Length: 442
Image (tube, rainbow, N blue to C red; front, side):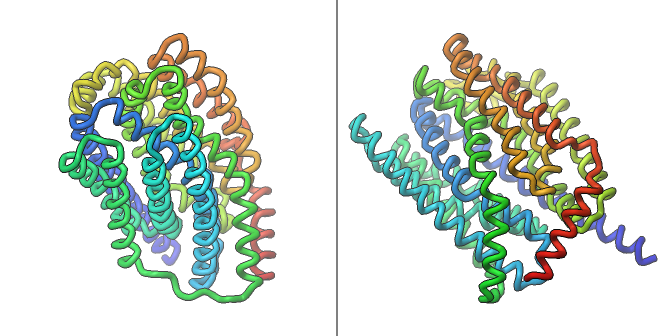
């Protein structure tokens, strides 16, 4: 009887997680798509391309200097025994993310100063990008750690409010001021400041954590051990996801970056948001069952997740093949419609990327981030080889066609390394012994 009630409670919570994850991703996607539609009416492809390139630097700062620590916090949360340990973990992750983000902003300013000196451009855009980086890291830290605790409602509302306010304020400032890059960036900054302050207050702070040096030291050691291999991996992930626009900017023009970035964003939003819904539903549960030694249940959850990603990928690509002209007409201004032919190839690449991410989850669950790095390297090397060649020979179409190539290679390598078809019984027992030993030491 108790077992039946426990199963029922688990299912109800899983459905609740699914509802809020779906709500957050759907509402955010609608806000972003609507904002992009209006913004592309107000700014030229050249301005949009400059915004995309600066946003790429912001994304690099988040991915390389803060996200590895945030991922470590998410993975280690299920192993915390009480509120005091969770608060201690949060403090360690926040401190490491803040220090590394400060370093990222300093490097961005140095790079911006050098670029401005040689090109006689305005360094103010890089200063705005640095501020945007800081507020974006704060947003991601808050949202991702809420997800790690399976507090999906708070995470979804935080994400949704930020996604609504960013395009709303950017459009308002462009309308009031001028169709310039600085007004768009300033709108994004103000929006995230407002949503961060609001939801930090609503969610409240963690309880004061213990000052025991042994606890803090153990958390720092665990976070660094998990995060360190993710740092080069996040760089590789950024190269695969955003490096194409810099290749286009170098070989072609900023206007063509704008065409490509707007089109890529529309397609990627559909696939990435769908994959993110599944990630937020299944990953915390998968990690939790794995950390508790429930091998059969974690294996079942993983393969349910894989099946959902495959089904969504196939359905999404087929739908886009049929509706790409309608999607372009609805989501982009007329001056951007020439890039509609890029959509199918980008869609296949996005679907393969989502599949590769879920196939690699056994490596993350088993804390084998160094092995995961090898899979990401394969995709980056493939991208570094094929992207310049295809852009040089085929232009924007070549950039789109390169997506399925390097994401496909990456997915195959990740599958061979992670072996998601194999139950990790023996490995998990070893992992549980390690967790028990660490708990006893703490």
